[in-house]
Image 1 (cartoon, one colour):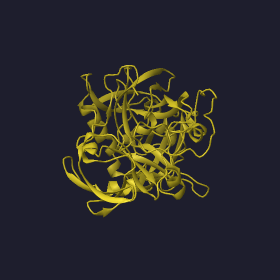
Image 2: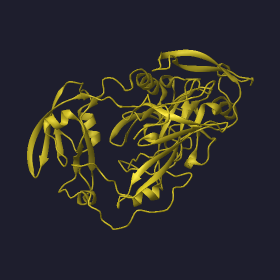
Image 3: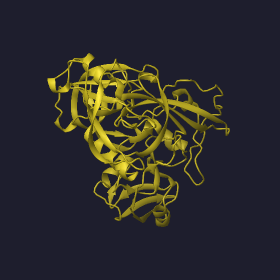
Length: 421
């Protein structure tokens, strides 16, 4: 199965129970094991969620020694509130090598990209089974995209965090502000109060070919910042399902490990061509890593920076839950597997009549049994469309008509000291 690797400690994940809001579908505890009381650790390994193969998400950060200064080349839109614009840099390096000179050595690529990749540490407050609160620490990576401190990372790296800290390759640390995030593409935009940083040299993922050399720069296990691994582009446009969302990703055999998420995948010229998001793992699996193509990341970041969200995205107003096994069905005290409404979060869904515990069995007549199938069924839908849902409630089948709202995403551009819960 696939799973996205969040920033919670795996042991803590096994021991803690989610406490949902009122009127939310909740599991029945199957043990009386108490919440661990051990103190939070300074560094943590990440937790994972299971979906269609085992996919652990990784986090990448900076690697070998970097040199040189940078020359600003403006690319896109005005940044909210700052008056500056997103800019990607090509480098004037003291090294004799340059991207225009052809494919570089791994050492030269590492030197070009090292100062552009950062470590990210997060803190979030979790509530245990007995209402005990604990601070959970996480780690990830990001890539600098402007000289004045704009950083791109994965949404799952910072999701739910109450505090985000960015560490540069030179050891300097900054409190980060969440500008905006897009869960659908797993892209988030951060800002730190810093100047004269070295942004990554932007590449072009559309022109990539299978077999090209790539380098991943990362922070495996959240403890080994500066790790460099190399490989090739193994495949283009891989359709992978993560957290119920279908994503089209680059595939590489460069070593990717938990702790690499949000870091950079660079081509043979030292240009950023992807943001590392996931790896496939298992006893019989080796050399399967994935990255979000930089062309997609760029378009999403421009929207997040200009609007605080990606315009045109639909919002069902529902938090959904995939129940795909008899054991999980028993845990949630439901009679069958399928796609369930865990909670109603939007006015549109509330007005349509949805309730926690509803099982969605069809959309506009198309049978669905998972979040991925629902996304596929709604792939051509637009904001303002009305959609007919067939549901099961208390053993009886019915239909509800939902008007699709526009998703505003998560934005916190005015929070200068971190992010709010």
